[in-house]
Amino acid sequence: MGQEILEYGGSDVDMVTGQPLARTPSKQEIKAKKHFENTIQGALGLAAELQGGNPVIRLLLQKYRDRLVFLASEDPECKALEGILLTLRHTLEVAPVLAEAHLRRVAGPQLSPFFEDTQVAPLGIPTSE
Image (spheres, rainbow, N blue to C red):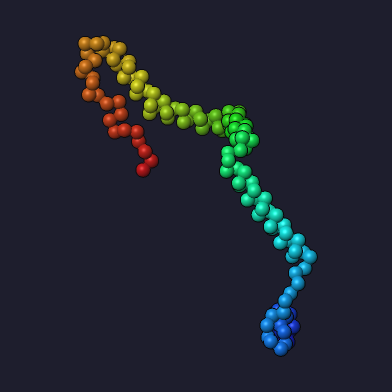
């Protein structure tokens, strides 16, 4: 059993000095290292090119954003979520302003000063805290 363990492991060493022998890399290792270096060089080159605000990338991102907006506008689930958000926005922002404008129209210029201290949302917009 002990011989089996020694039989398979370890690196080759010089019998006189005890130092590891220089190992020549295989063709696969050389190819993998070259691929790694080329990939790194390509990534660095692309990153340098993008630092200047490449107009082609900007155009691609704009087209991608436009496509996402189109797809979301056609998706029933996105439409439902947008409807909920628009209802919440209307309740929190639009409805109080419309109600105040209606109150001022009904009260007229003589009674409007009595409503000056009325706040539309006295507690502010609720948060999820």
